Image (cartoon, rainbow, N blue to C red; front, side, top):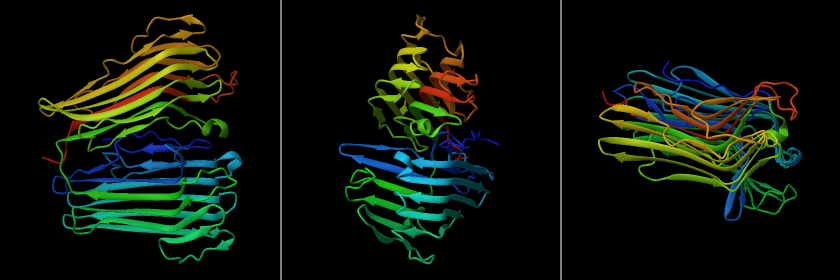
Length: 439
């Protein structure tokens, strides 16, 4: 296998799995006779809140994303139990969200299929309910034709108290009293079978909030329930990129309160095609999960660019004024950065410039930690400070830099955090390696 898997997604975990390269969206059809990029994803729900000039998101549930190296015949899954969005679950609850992704390639063909299933759905305080809904987006490719196929099925779907017929036409819009509208079985196609690109996106339910409402959803907000997409672009490239950065993230068997803020903050993603010299950025003024982690400004960036003799990708995360575990750890600033270069077909991996400044542990000032410094946190577990992982020239795994990574290993700790909980502050990872379409 030429890819690594990080399987997340158990009870109470808002799982998101990226396949192949940890942050690259597209998957490469590896055969020289079938050059191209496949991209796609599937997830159970996403709530985008429109709050004027700024917008925010509560994060994906049960998300899988096809990465640059695909799954090579494997089926990868992400799952979440007891989903709850909004105060008291008013926006959405579900018993189970389960998503999967599969791809495979031969010298003449490529296939991919992404699915998401939601069981026990209750959305918008009962305005939308269903025993189950399922969406599928699949494709098959040969040297002449790209074929895409949608799938959208449900059991006992009711909207505004009315049963929705199972044979409802795609892209049917219904009214949601005192909220807005919902599009059922939304299907969007792009390109065509004989063109250089074809894709399809399937959304079971796409809610547009158009009126002030008792749920407190701002006008302009969008609630997506059940999405799967897939796309193939015939193309060749000399360099494959990938990367992501975020300010904070918490993984583990989390309570609903923690889960609501556990997703990556201010995330940026560098896809396989790179940014072509444009800096991608995301910012957040602060993050605060009382007693667990709080920060000041978060700024995350990613860029790919040409350099003399090749290409480079740089990903950074800057986080200010960090406090962890009721102030047990305090840091003035984190700068996590990775740079991968490809020159004359050879990869170089670097974390140069990564640093943690103004470190205090248990009230005692510490000198700037050297790379991969591990410290014991009495009553909680341990932390790795200034964590850096570089890669060999032949590797396709991402270069990684973490400002702080906390691992909870002590049960019944003062904050009630479950063992196995991981808290990361200031994460950057990136990769650039020679393209493998041209032989």
